[in-house]
Structures are given as C-alpha cells and as structure tokens.
View 1 (cartoon, rainbow, N blue to C red):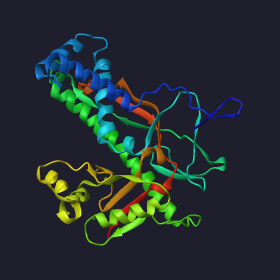
View 2: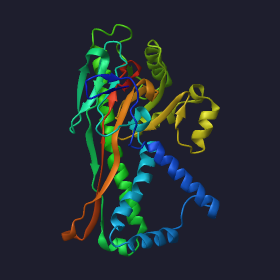
View 3: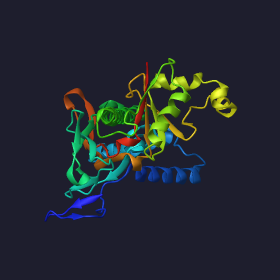
View 4: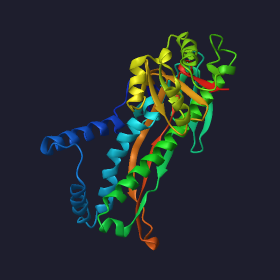
Amino acid sequence: MSTILPNGAVAEHLAPRTARKSDDYVAGIVEAQERLASATGRKTATREEKQRRLAGILADKDNYMVRLGQGMIGPIQLKLRYQGMTRNVLLEDPLTPGVPVMYDVLDEYGQAYILSGNEGEVRVTPFEGKKVPVRLFRIATFPQIKKEDLWYLRVNIVEYAQDMSKQAIMMQEDARLITVLEAAINNYAVDPNHVVSPNHIVNELSGYITPDSMYDLVALIEVHQLEASRLLFNPIDYRDLYKWDINQTGWAFKDRVVAGERIVQFGGFQVQRSIEVPQGTVYMTPSPEFLGVFPVMYSLDVEENHTPEKFHKGWVMDELVSEIVLNPRGLGKIVKA
C-alpha cells in the first residue's frame, strides 16, 4: 500500500493508524468476559447485574445517553466481525484522517472494483501504475427507544436497540459487498484480456448446490495460483448442504449435522450465510489478503439523536468506509439453473 505525500510523491509504507479494527474491539470484549468469569464464574452478567449497571449510567444525568451509545459499539463490532460477511471477506484496514491512501491493484491488467458514493454504484477502475485511490461512503443507522423504557430499567429494550443497530449496519455492509463481488465476477468473465479460465461462473443443473460444482469452481480459481477459502450462501441455499449424502460428505460431517451443529466449515472452506446473498447463487472467495480491502476512516461513531415530541431517546451510529476488490482472479460463483 502507498501513501500520497503533499508534494505528490508516493511513500511505500503503511501510515500510522488512528481508527480501530473490529478485532481490537473483540479483544477488549474477550478480556472483559474473562475478568467477569474470573470474578463470578460466568462470562455473561445476570439480568439484575445489567439493571444495576443501567441504573448507574442513568444516574449520570448529563452523559447517560452518550455512555449507553458508546457501550453498544463494542458488542456491535464483535457481531459485525463474527456474523457479518464483509469483515471476513475483505481485509479491514483502518485509515489515518487527512492522509490520502492508494492501494496496489493485484490484477495483472490493472483493474480494480470500487464502490463509489452512497447508492451502491460500482465503478470499474483501470489505473495507470496499478494503484487505486479510496472513495469512502457512509453507512448509518438511527436506533431509538421510548424514554420510559429507560427509567423502567428495561434492559431487554436497550439490548434490542443494540441488536437492531447491528443488523442494520451489517446488512448495509454485506449488500454493498455483494454488489462489488457481482461486478468483479461478471466483468472478469467478459473482459477479452482474461484468457486463462476467464469465466468463473459455474452453472449447477441438479437443482441444489453439490460438492462437484464447488470443486469445478475451485479448479478455475486454482489455475491462477490462488486458493478459495470462503463460501457465501443465502440461507435457503445453505440448506442444500444438509441434503448431501454420506458418500459425498463422510460420516463425521453427517454426525455433526444430525447432532444439530450449524455448518460453518466444509473441507477447507469457511461457510457463511446472509440474506443479502441472492437466492440461487453461492460466492467463492480467497483469503482476504488476496482479494481486497475494507478501508475504515471511523467505525462506529455515535451521537445523540432524540425525538422529544415522540418521547423517544436515540442515537445516530455511522461509519465512513469503502469496499474494494483488488484481485478478481480469486473470485467465482455457482448459479443454480
């Protein structure tokens, strides 16, 4: 990665960062859980403990809403990291305010795929020198709760607002991810410059996703000396995995399914699901460092955002980010006929 200096020169180093990665929040939460477990033998607080904590925050008349909002950020980041697709498919990269950044395009023909603006538009960007600038966009959510719910110490309402905020941010991140993956795969298939296994789209004719179609797509990606590592499903297509017989999966896989375990891995693949993935399509991606980046200027920022005429207390939570595919050669998709 390169940094543009004020004189126009390019410095080949990583600039110091000020934003935090979701992994940093995860580490803090895990540490807090371990402290709680050490003190009480439990990793989660009881309802009564949560109510006492909420009452203590409400006693701070001037800052209680900011403190509540800031307290939601860590758990939301934790779930974005482990439940969302974007931060597992792209390499999260915190940016330094005021320092323009350019990334090296990994495609041999100098094409990258960037989301530009807030409308989900994808721009195909061939750049001289194979470097691509960051174009940031905002993702936001506006959670609100009734004023009386706070003073009744209804902890579940606060937790519900937190969960809905997570869902809203995650769906926006993942929807934009699918948009940029689609553009990269489809454009790569029709680009005349790509002559080595250019079409990374496998049609599944059986009516459900099979291991054979996965292995066919893996072969198309491995021609480029890349290894596929992730599968992205719609929840409906994800259930196709449960239809595989023992000859395809082996006993150990079937035993886990019968025991009620959720399938999060098959062979060398991490398996994720999201309603943002179009039904009938499964995406295959390489490890994040071989695909692209998720630049983050800040994530998440929280400010008070009340609606007093409705007696609602609330926040605005937003992040300034981008999503860039730097190497489309490791991407592919399976499409049900």
